[in-house]
Length: 269
Image 1: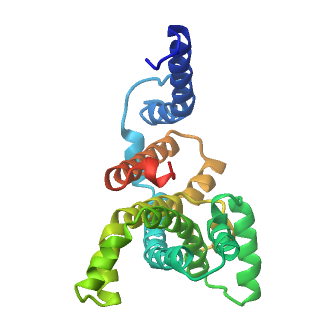
Image 2: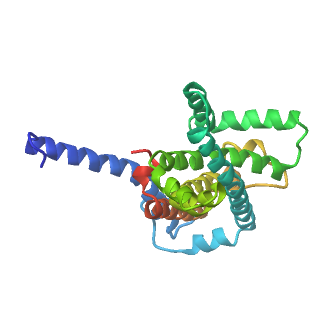
Image 3: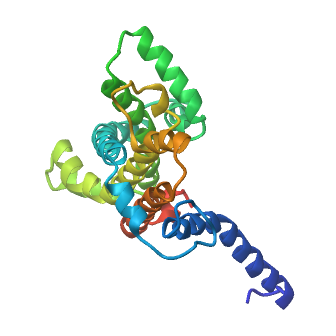
C-alpha cells in the first residue's frame, strides 16, 4: 500500500478499476455468449449451448468472400503503409527541420487517429473521384494505407526517441557505411516497434467500416460491411459468431503487440 493511502481509498480505487474493466468487457462477453446460443435468435442469457452458428457464419459465402477481401486489403495496406510510415518517422525525427515544421508534420501524419472515419471516407471519395480513380480496390488500398500510417509512425517515433545514438556512432567508427548502419544496426533495433505498429495497423484496416463504405463498389465488399448488410435483413446469432471471431483476432493482435513491444510503450507511456 502506498504511503499515506488509507485502506478505504485503496478499496475504492480497486473497486473503481474493477467496475471500469467490467464496463469495457461486458459487451464483448455478451457477444461471445450470444454466439453459442442454441436458439434461432440472439438472446441473453442463451437458450442452450451450440456452436452451429459458427459453422453457419463460416459457410456463408458473403462472409467468407468479404473476409478474404478484408485480409488481402489489410495485408496490402500494411505492406505499403509500413515502409512509408518508417520513412516518415525518420524524416520527422531526424530531418533538418524547424521544430514548428516538425510538429506540424507529425500532427498531419497522426491526424487519422483523431479525425472521424466518416470524414476521412468522404474526403477520400471526393478527392479520388475528382482525380478520376474509379477502381474500388485502388481506392480501398489508398484509403487503408492512410489508416495504417499513423500507427507505424507513432511506434517508430517512440522508439527513435529512445534510440541510443552511440550504436550508430560505433558502427561508423568501425567502418560501416550509412546504408549498412541503417540496415544492420538501426532497423534491427527498431524492428519490434515497427512490427507493433504494423500489427496494430493491420487490425485497424481489417476492422474498418467507416472509410471503406465510401470507397467500395457493387462487386467489392469487406467483412465489416458484409456484416452490416447482413444485419439489415437477418437477425440470428451468426453475426455474433463472426463478431466473436473478430474479437479473437483483435485480442491476438493486442497480445502480439504486448509480446514484441509492450502496449505501454506503444501508447507512449
